[in-house]
Length: 206
Image (cartoon, rainbow, N blue to C red; front, side, top):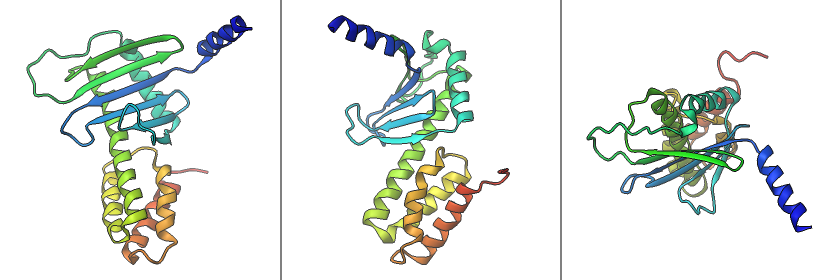
């Protein structure tokens, strides 16, 4: 019976979809640690500690996931060094990890000149910025109604600079502001405008 269970586990691992894990450790920065897992189906997890018991889960769009995985493929699934070797300031130790069943490969670097590595890192930096705005908005919506307008304004600015991904995760928080007249009118109006832009982006076709 035990042998059958082991075979089942091995088979499950073999059929599991691959995932990409990004970590950045940069003591003194905010946040000092980030871990993001992106699965092939777009499901993603954001953590600010390796043992974070309250991770944030979100969903990336297929074109975004496709580009991320294409970049990982161009980087040979992290089998080659990425460190530039240049004498540069500490920018935080980054790690890319490829997990495909039992197979795992990873590479660490402080600074890379590889354009594909920098493009992939940019995706994860965007995810980090996104979740930072999500955390700020969630906190103000729950505990600081007067501060909600500032958090929404900052989120809107980041959205206009194309620094946010997985925008749908913000909708429950925005809707909470829109429907509750205890928030400032300007916050409710701004939240309504952002929610409409998320639900009906320009160029969307039926």
